Image (cartoon, rainbow, N blue to C red; front, side, top):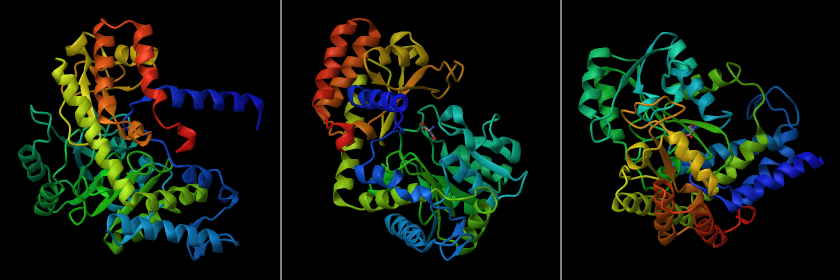
Amino acid sequence: MDKKIAHYLALENNRQNECLELIASENFTSKAVRELCGSILTNKYSEGYPGKRYYGGCQHIDEIEKLAINELCKLFNCKFANVQPHSGSSANMIAYRAIMNKGDKLLSLSLEEGGHLTHGSPVNFSAKDYTIVHYGLGKDGRIDYEMLEKIAHKEKPQVILAGFSAYPYQIDFARIGKIAKDVGALFMVDMAHIAGLIAAGVHPSPFPHADIVTSTTHKTLRGPRGGIILTNNENIIKKVNFALFPGLQGGPLENIIGGKAQCFIEANTPEFRKYIENVVLNTKVCADEFRKLGAFSSETETHLFLLNTKKSYGLTGKVAEAKLEEINITVNKNMLPNDDERPNTTCGIRLGFAALTTRGLDEEEARKIASIIHHYLKGDLIKEKALSKVKEITDNLKRVELI
Ligand code: DSN
């Protein structure tokens, strides 16, 4: 390996081990997943699908991709899947192209209220290619299902989309699925954040309510960085496959598909279910502790919650993120419902426990993390003391390269 790259790789290794990683969309993959991603599978071109490739020599690649598809369908109890999307955003673009025509209407939650750029943000392709209407959250920060129903009947969208990036509560897929049926819309779910919770049976499944489901594989699912698309509808999977190749992508990343197959196998085990139960428990304990300490934190039923740092400590999310980085705690600023700051400033931060729970973090440590963050942002814990408290926790966790 080139010395300069090796140098930065070693520094990143140290950072991952020495910091408390609380970014809700990150995780630490198993060694087997990393080995597959860095394997010789990266050498192979295989445009097309198993049995229908545009290159010779795909016989073993075909078996790996078929295995990934089968394991994925088994994990989420659905009939058809495509494991080739390079990312969650491209999975969403491909899914939209498969089920909508340009200009069709998409009813979704906005990025500001917890959605995603690809769910119709004005700066994203989704708002340029489709007509976007949004439903919203109620005062309690939860989806206002009655409003959603009213808007759906008024707007008659082609597609209703659920599944979010910064929503700490369970989603009632059955209810939204029924609304979609009533108005003649297709129901799409982007389960990227909660895929691991669904796989573990800790969050209700989008099936059989959704017509099409997209996800990333690297968040709570703890696999390699990439996307997937699932459906029970044979006609839809044909359109998805065509929209992906030749529509958008060329050669699949077969090394990543190998890593995905490994991730689906790992997620279909009792150990993974126990892990996800611990993620949800650690998240709840930490969010509850913030509220006990007098901070303004959301409640949670998932792997993440939102902390209003402006109301709690007079600090924007941007400043809070930077301050926490000083003491080796990694978070991201995030828009909160009714946020009055700009997207790159925000009123708060998003915290999640998928990554640290993989390193073996327990409830007591989750409680301590709330206390360190609270007192440091409040200004009554000095930097040196905060750093030593963080080190006490990280020293006790599994090392990242050993997972
Ligand atoms: N950017 C991701 C997140 O952090 O939630 C969503 O894709």
